[in-house]
Length: 258
Figure: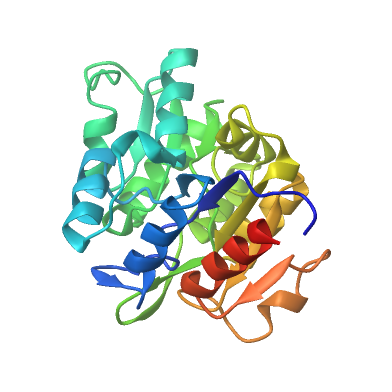
């Protein structure tokens, strides 16, 4: 890698931790990375909890992360809802609702549908309410369209299956806010160029392919939701395939020292 890496975009769930378990060596590797000249930013599609709850959990796990370093699709969705003055039906987890309480008026009718990861709301009652709103012309906004994610007890369905079901039944197309949206990655770059950044993540599509489509090198880690052979399912293939976040950090530091 000839270009020095000045910004490292890091996925959270599956890359640094799985639920409340830290990926071995991740805390120490993050400290090493912070000791270099590279800046870090945590880009996540996590929608199951608010930014405050997420930040508290990461700190409790032992990670040295500032709240303003977290760039989330949930936050991007909040800004979209606020900017467009929407009052959506929220198919998101109760733990994430606090990010919207000051901009949603529950006494007024919904005029959009916003979908995140909401296991308790992916049932006929809520989905049918969303379906009827879409038939009336309300826009469908997906915070992300992840296929699955890693839990402590194994892989679990992401919101993508339910978003696609609503698209199919209502004959609409969802607007995707988070990864792998190119706009999401471009916003995460801030003042850095794509060539100066890398993205580390466990999702070959949302993390790696999405980043590389935006001109950012993608480092795929074999933790979290990674499955054998993921690296050959996208074109171009990942810039690097690493056993874990620890190895990805070592590669970055070695590259910048060369």
